[in-house]
Length: 313
Image (tube, rainbow, N blue to C red; front, side, top):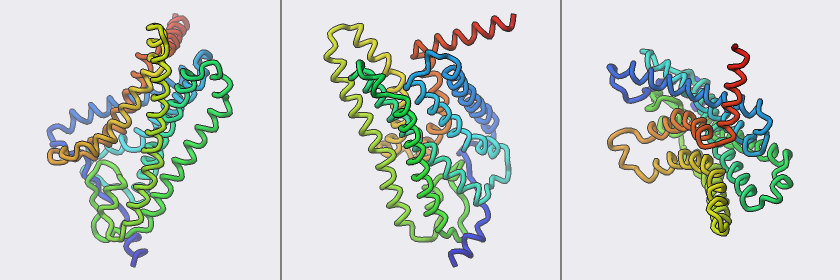
């Protein structure tokens, strides 16, 4: 019976964003502009880090991986959302839906681990500056990124394998603009206790524990900053953490907003709002945060523009 139900479920229908028909064009242009800004902005960050030798440091190594993750993260859901905004038949094949869910979870978790690695880098830079180059070796940075990828893959794979065992019977309309795990579980006519248990357990590992590590890191950073007698030293320490703190606030602000403001669902689906923050807003803002708040990035950008101007003459 389970295999029969799974085989008969050849596709899902996405309801998309709760937008009135007369507003489709305006929102399409808005989200397309935001997506293009995300792609170009993050690719520019990767290019700057690759070309400027001054940016070949652990912090920018992690930042380049974060930029790649943001581009991939948005590309998993936004192009399909844009196509569906002008499509009458908003369907997605079963295999495509499962794949989209897998990569959405994968890049969500990868974001969390990379942000945590960057927090550890800032902790070592401020609390142990004399041993920074010894601790944050190239091998350790590569190991942290590799572990982030492996744990993210294991997390998304566990959800995907469990979901593939469920039956979906007749219901195949997803109240979302992409194949979200929570929305898919609501459509299942099987027992989802194990799926929900894994969601909670894995969520603690990939969201809660990294957040605690970030809080501990900045706790030590704050204590170290308070010991610095000069205002100049405090400003310098804060400047190195300001961009990362902004990214952390955006990332975890969306997550905690989903649980701290449940009444928002009376007016609009909070899951859709949170997903838009993840897939559209945060990846778009990250390049601006690291470009406008970071002196090294601004200097590298100016150097690139001056080089381009020289060759164009």
